[in-house]
Structures are given as C-alpha cells and as structure tokens.
Image (cartoon, rainbow, N blue to C red; front, top):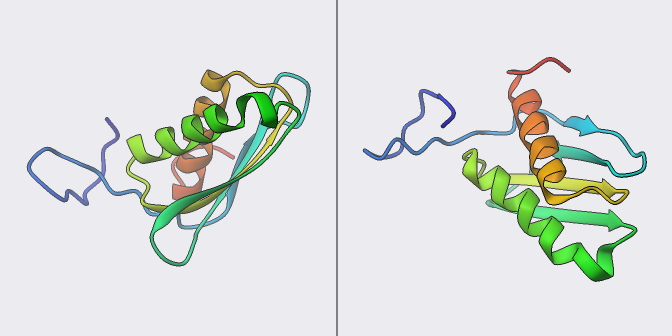
Length: 107
C-alpha cells in the first residue's frame, strides 16, 4: 500500500492526484513507453498504440487501468506505446509513471 495523507475512509484508501505529465519505459522491443498526465474530470482514460492491440489490447488496457486504480489514481490520461510488453511490464511502467507524476520517484 502506498502512503499518503489523504485518507478517504477507515480502510486506508489512498487518493493519488496526478500533478504533472510523467513517463516510464522505452519504445523498444518487448517494452512499453507509458505516459501519464492530468485529466479534467473523473475517470482514467487509456490510449493504446500496440503491435498486438487486436490480440491483447483489452488485457493491456486492463493492466494499466488496474495498476493506476490500485495506486489510488481516480483521474488521469494514460498513453501506452507498446512494443510487445507483457502485462507485468505494463503494470511496473504505470507504477513508475504515477510515482514520477507525484514527484516521488527519480525521473
């Protein structure tokens, strides 16, 4: 669980606000470049460019959105430029991008 001062209930749910645009990963084979940015309004929007979009697009979007939600993100635009990354790579890149967008990880 990520630590933050903005607790919204007794179950220690955390809200992470995306403060600035941030990226993680690379646009090379078997990796993905993830860019997360603030979004007006609620919800997480995912834009996917992928060489395997037809076969695995829904899974990649679910992995990215799921990781952001687990981290407490409620509003963001996530852009994925995928070159064949597995879902755990997508999740790790989203995690790094969210932390960078918070100012909490090295860029």
